Image (spheres, rainbow, N blue to C red):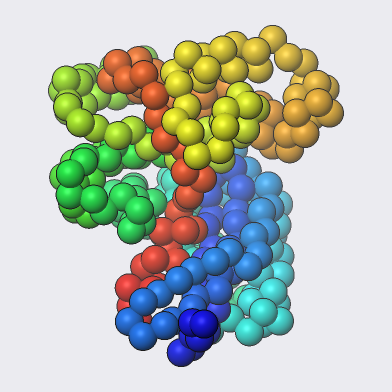
Amino acid sequence: MKHFNKTIKYATIDIGSNAIRLLISNIYIHNSEFFSTKNSLVRVPIRLGQDAFKNGEISQKNIQRLLDSMKSFMLLMKVHNVDKYLAYATSALRSSSNGEKIIDLIKKESNIKIEIISGQKEAKLITNNPAFSTKSKTFCFIDVGGGSTEITLINNNKVINSKSFKIGGVRLINNLVKKSTWDKFGNWIENNLSNKKNIEVVALGGNINKIFKISGNKIGKPLSIKLIDSTINDLEKMSFFNKIITLKLNPDRVDVIVPAGKIYQFVLNKMDVKVITVPKIGLADGMVHELINEL
């Protein structure tokens, strides 16, 4: 029977454009091997991107909600006896004129230190997973968030190409993506991703995870583009009421799931791929691996 030499707890905080998340993970150490399991996940639907992308700054109301959430997260980390944490903010605070003031306030009031990271660092963290380190294959990660979409090519655990675009679900529902942005997005895909051989496309993000679940696809099996198209088509026809009651979607997910789905469709059609992998990992998981790598 295998006994672990040491067990520690890590917490990762992901401050996104549509929601913020606290992930607490158990890290088990046996000799030189590391194993991680999810202990607890808390998601708070604060749509910071609604403020940042439309008005250029976060409102006082959402600053207070964010601050209250961080104070709560600090208490949760305390009662869980967390050994170490990371807190990263992405597109919404990157785009906000008062982003730096907000993280200074949160540090002062809650003692949580937050770093606003670039789209490139965000993409690298999301793809930081040992499951995708095989030498024989190139992986293309597509991560659609509320404020941005990151596309990253990985081979042999190294980033060979990466690009972040200001196209996301929250931006789309507020009509904040220009045609010129779509054109640049499409041109980049055609120039960098078309006609690539032996690529496994990996789709990340809460919306594609929900689309996968709604589609009825078997867990662990690749998701076909045909099934993605039919699922999004069905969602477009459903009422707000049915999306919440029948599909049990959160209200903050209902209005962004189809626009986000259309971003995936756009990329996949440009790449002309037939199936994708949906592994249900995200930024917070990549942050856990960053902490483990520091051991």
